[in-house]
Amino acid sequence: MNWISLHAAISRELGRSNKTISRELKRLAGQEAYSAEKADAHSHDQRHSARKAVRFDSWHQEQLKRLLKMGFSPEQVAGRMTLKAANKALGCSTLYRYFTRHDWRQ
Image 1 (cartoon, rainbow, N blue to C red):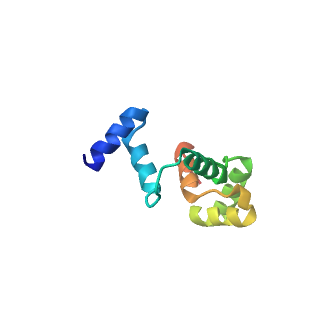
Image 2: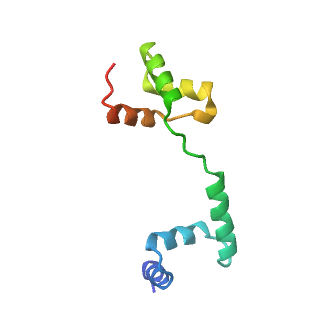
Image 3: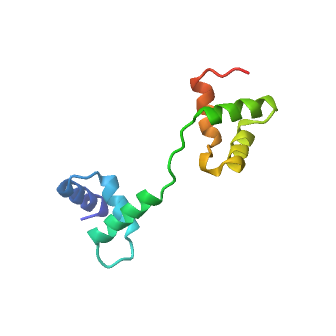
């Protein structure tokens, strides 16, 4: 039995996607045996240590308008926001999405 059919068999038995099974087995490579408790603890730790999403709010809008009027690029605006308030940092891709959604014109 090759790896692909083994992953398919496991995924059918557990009712999970092949990708999920493949990712778990890769992550656990080098360990002697699979431990559901360790996998669950790892998943919990990953979920709780992940950076929380920041909402684009009125503070961001004001900063964006002010800095763009000063001639800053969206990348520079994102960097300035990070320096000013790291807990409210946004990436430049978020700013570009904002431009697209709101038909931004200066």
